[in-house]
Image (cartoon, rainbow, N blue to C red; front, side):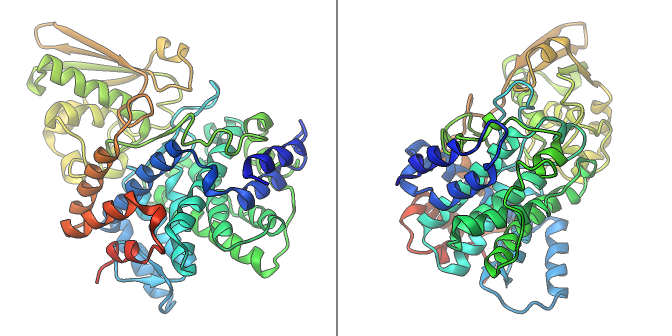
Length: 480
C-alpha cells in the first residue's frame, strides 16, 4: 500500500471529533516513502537542510554553543556515535540532537513555517528544521542510515510538526507557548522513530511520551533559552522514541484527548487542518517554508526587504532620515517585544533595530547582530527615530500575512513609503539553492570553517539522497 493510500485509510478513521488522530499520525510516520515526495519537496528540503547545517556551524561559536559543550563535558558521557556540529565532540544521539538544535536556533536565522488559515499567525508557527534535522542527523549517524533515509525522516518530522502547529488553536502561541518547542518535540520523535524502524503502535507511544515533554514559553524570547527550546525539543523527541522502543507505556491519544496536547496547550484545534492532510500536500510544497535572509525574527523580514528596496531605489542616506514609521498587524509587536535592545538577542526581536541598522549599514547579517553594534551611539540614535505601531491596514490584511507599511520622512520633509506582505526567502520571493549556499558560506566563515570543507558540505547536500551514509557529511561538519 502506498503512503498516500495508507494516509487516506487512516485519516478516514480520524472522526470529526478527532478520534484516532494520534494513530493516524503514527501510521503516516511509519508508512511514508521517499517516492511519495514530489521533486519540489525534495529540492526545497535540501535548501532547508543546507541552511540548518550552516546555522549549526555559526551557532557553535555563539556563547550558547560554548555553554552547551561545557555542559556535555560535565556529564562525563564518554564517546558516542553522533556528532556535535562545529566541535570534536561525539556523544549519545539525544545529546547531539540537543546541541545541534540549540546551534541551529542560536542566531534566530533558521527557517520558518508559513500559516494557511487567516486566524493562524504567519511566521509564528514553528521553526521546523531546528527540532527535526538534529534528531534525523543524530539517529541517522548512529544507525548508519543512508542519505535518502535521513532525508525522508527529516521530511516526516517537519510534516508532522507543521501540521500540528497549523491545527492547534492560535491561543497556543498568543498566550505564551513557543510552538518550535512544543510542536517540535513531535517532529523529533517522528524523525527519530522512523530511523529507528518503530512500528505504528510504538510510534503512537513515542508521540505520547513526546507530548508530555512538550514545553517552552515565549517570555524567554531574546535570551539563550529561546534556542534552548529548539535543542530540548529535539532531544526530548529522541528520548521519547528511545523510551517507546524500550517498552515504556503511554496513552494512544495524546493529540486528541480532552486532557491531551491540543486541548491542554491550545484550548482546541481544527481537526481538518491535520486529519488527511499529512503529505497531502507536503508542507514544503504548500504553503511552503520560508528561509531567512537576516538573523532576526521572521516578522521583521517583510519590512527589512522593503526597507532595503527603498534604500536602493531612492538612495536614502542615514544622515538624511528624520523619522521612520513601521506599521504592522497587532500580532507582530506581540513577538517583536524589544523596542530599545541592549544586546544581540534582544536585537533579533526589535523592529526598531532592524530598520536602524539597514539605514546605517545597508546590510543586516551575522556581523551586525552583535552587542557592540547594537550599543553603538549612532545605532541607538537611529533607533530613537523609528516608531513601531499597529496599522489598521495591516490588521485588516489578516494574520496569515506579515503585511508591513513603511513611511520614511527625510530632513526637508520629503516622504518615501512602501509596503510588503512577504520578505525575501518566502515562497513568494524564494531563495535559490545557490543563494542558500551563499548564506551557508557566510555562516561557515563566521564559524572559522575552511572554505574547502564548506564547499564539500554544499556538494554533499545537493546529492544527499545518493549518499550511502551521512558519515562523510558529518565529518565535514566536525573539527578534526
